[in-house]
Every structure is written in C-alpha cells, then in structure tokens.
Amino acid sequence: MNSLVRSSVDTSELRQIDAATRGDAAARHALFERYREVAYRVALRITGRHEDALDVVQDGFIRAFDGLAEFQREAGFQTWLLRIVSNRALDLVRARRVRLAVPLDADDADGRATVPADERSPQPDAALEQSELAARLRVAIETLPPDQRAVFALYATGELSYGQIAETLGIPIGTVMSRLFHARRRLYERLPDLAAEWGVETPPPK
Amino acid sequence: MQGPPRELDELLRALTRGDPSAVSDEDLARIEAALEADPGLTAALAAEPAGVGDPLVAAVGGTTPTPTAEEWARVWDNISAGTAAAMRPAVARRASVWLRLRVPLAAAAAVLLAIGTWWNWERRGGDAWEIRLAADVEIDDIDMQDSTTPVVIRLRPDGPVVIWALADMAG
Amino acid sequence: MRHWQTGLAAVLAMALLSASFGQAQDTSKRKTDIQVLAIRATNKNTEISPELKEIADELKKQFKFTGFKLEKRATGSAGIDEAFKTPLFEGWEARVTPKENDTKRVKLQIEIAKGTDKPDSATVTVPLGKFQLMGGQKLENGDSLIVAVAGR
Image 1 (cartoon, each protein chain N blue to C red):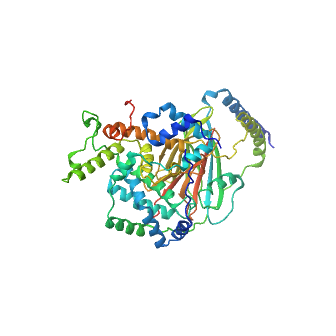
Image 2: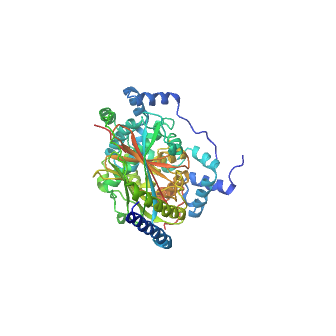
Image 3: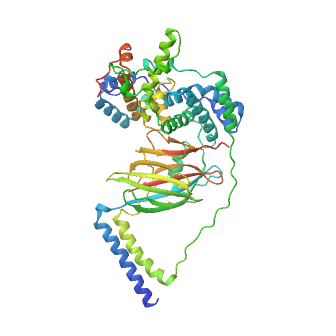
C-alpha cells in the first residue's frame, strides 16, 4: 500500500477562509470558483438532474459561507462544502421520491438498462453514443441506495482520498470501502457490457 | 514498520482497484475488522487517492456535463444575495423558578425518599452517568425540518460524531 | 412535626420503597434510563461547565465555539417506544424514545423541537451509558443548542 502524505490545506486558502468568514466577497468568490465544479459533480451524481445539481450547489455554498463562523477551518473548505452538498442532495432525492427513468422490468433481454427515446437527441454518432452512455450511467447510479450513492458520488470525482470521503460523510473508512464495494458491484451488474469491455469480472448476480 | 499481512494487502489492493469479483463479502468483513483494529492501516488507506485508474470513474467523469458561464454567473448572483448573516436580537432570559417545600413534612419524606432512591440507585449501578461520548455509533435515521440540512461530523477519526442541523439562515 | 404528617411521610416512603423493590423484581419490563444534557454553545465567552470538559475538548476539534454551558440536566426513564420528554430552555424540548435495548447497546430516537415546529430527529444506536450529540439549532442570541443523550 503506497503511503502518501495527505495534503493539508494551504495557508493561502486558510487566509481566504478567514476573509470569507468576515464576509469578504472576493474571498468567497475565489472559493466558489475553486470548488464549484467538484460540488456540481457530487450534486449531479446524487440528484441525477442538472438543474437540481445547480440548485444544490447554490444552496450548499450559501450554507457553507453562513456556517463558516462556527466551524474550524483546518479541515478545509472543500470538506465542509461537500459535506453540506452531499447531504442537501440526498435530502432532495428523498423528498423527490426518485423514480427510475427506466423501470427495472423494462431492461432489455440481456439485463441492460435501456435508454428511453426522449433521452436521445439528433446528434452525430459519437455524441449520441456519449449521451447514451451518460444516460445509462445516470440510470444505473440512480439504482444505488442513498448511502452508497453518496459515497460513489464523492469517489467518482476522482479528487478525494478515501480519508476525505470518510471525513465528508462522517463515517469510518471501513464503511466507505464497504459501501463503495457494494456500489461498484451493483453498477457493474447493471452495466455488464461495460464491465466486459473494461475487463472487470463481475460475480454472478445474487 | 511492518505492513499488513500479505493476503490482507492483496485484498485491499483488489478493493481499491474496484474489482468486485476479487473480494467476497467475507473478505470485506475481514478488511473492515482490520481497519477498525489497526490505526496505521487506516491512516495509510485514508491517504490513498480514491478512484485512480478506475474505468468507471473515467466514464463518469467523461460524461459529466459542464455548466455554462451564464449558469455559473446566475448561481453566484444567488449565492451573493443569499448569504446575509442574521443577527438575532438578544432576549432577556427568564428567571428560574424554584419549588418551595413545606419544611416539616418534606424533611421526613426527603429522608425516606433518599433511602429509597439510594437503594434504587445502587441497583442501577449508581449515579454513573459519567459524561463520555459514544464512539461506536450507528446512525439509523435522520429526519429534519425542510429548511435544515443535517450533516454528520466526526469529531476525530473513528471517534464520536455530532449530528448537526444546518439551518437556512438566508433572509 | 405533627403525628399525621409523620404518618403520611412514612406511608409515602413505604410506597417508594415498594416501588423500588417491585421494579427490581420485574427485569423483563425494566425501562431504559435516559439522561439528557442541554448545552449552550457560544463564541461569546470561554466559560465551560466543569461537567462538559471532555465534550468541549472534542467539539473544539471541529467547531469554533469557545464556551459550553450546561443549561439543564434531566434524567428519566421510558419503556420501548415510549417517549421521555423534557423541556430544555428557551422553549426547546427534547423527546427521547428507546427503540431497542440489550445488554450492550441501546437504540434511541432523539427529537429536538420548539413549539409546534416539526422536530429535528435522529435515531442512533450507541453503547449503554455513552452520550450522543445532536445540535445546531439556533438560540435567541445566536448561540447554538447542543443536546447530549444517553440511555442504559
């Protein structure tokens, strides 16, 4: 196991956080520009909807800035922000009573999630293939239970360590690994053609 | 410092590699137990970047749309308008109310009550309400007001958690 | 003391002692003992109630609060799915409902509410006698409420 040194929050960000705590608009905007993309990706993977993700990001930053006066800044703004964003996104999903874009029994004969016609748009082949893949991934991720979905959403940013995921969600790192394992297994069961393409063996469905 | 046993190390690598077939449910339970027992192992795993080399992560990342500049500008405008610290007015605290006991009757009753209480207290293990925080916590459910976002904050690694209600302070 | 008062006190004590003995015999219906601590967390001062020193040290790892005051400590008991209710301060109330209780751990539903507002609720399973923290509700002067709950 590689032993990497966990990156600590740099001093310039700590100064930005201090200034943002005092209400400095420029500091807040700098933090917004730095972390809006990762917040959006997490929110999108949990909510599955672009506009909902933007709303969650907006709400997340408002609450994060408002809460700065109460929380220690050493953990870093990203952890603080993603903690709020992931919880807010989960709240929205629960409140929305998410229904799958494709009912489970509408899978094709090979058990693959199919893409409804209205998800497609008249595009060149490569773009069409990409949007179909996006839709299939979205549908598959939406089948994950909320706790697995949150862990996977943070994992899929590709920007966090396992420790940061644990800290963001307030769970032990063993729980992160367990939920991630079950999430990936479930996703590959839903996307067996992709698993085969990537050389990932999937255990037989339970 | 010795690393983890070779088999466990291989399991951890398979787990982080994202290969579902290489790790059984029993293996997963072993890994979780090992992480709980070994802070050094936990720290090493915690530092690992998540998702590196995982084709699933690459696929998800490659299919994530990017908000437009106009959308980001709208979001920032709303954030700027929404963050207003709400200074709440100070309110005088209510005076405490003390219950007065009639002395003669109360004195006798209090002594006998104390005997009964002490006996019951001893049976329950004494007033051992030592204020210690729970570290091994399972959160089964959280349900808060619509305007509130619950966040779970672990006070230290594998330590106690606090369930925090983050209220909407805007307006 | 007058004779009738003495007699009344004796009857009262016997009733209490009987209840204590009776409770000891019937362990299958033993209720869960519950303790609730209502804490005011502030950054306006640095006063920490002595009982809260450990909690304060832990909370300071993640929060900027500098003062922690034990506003109320309430002890009671409740059976499974029965609520132990206790007023806190500033109109806040806590309700603790045991859901499960075995020899090592207890599952508690913790609700914090003010007036008729929908309560903030969490259900947790914790070791017997160890406190779980829940809070963040804003108090009238901007301080924060933290509630610590334990069951055994």
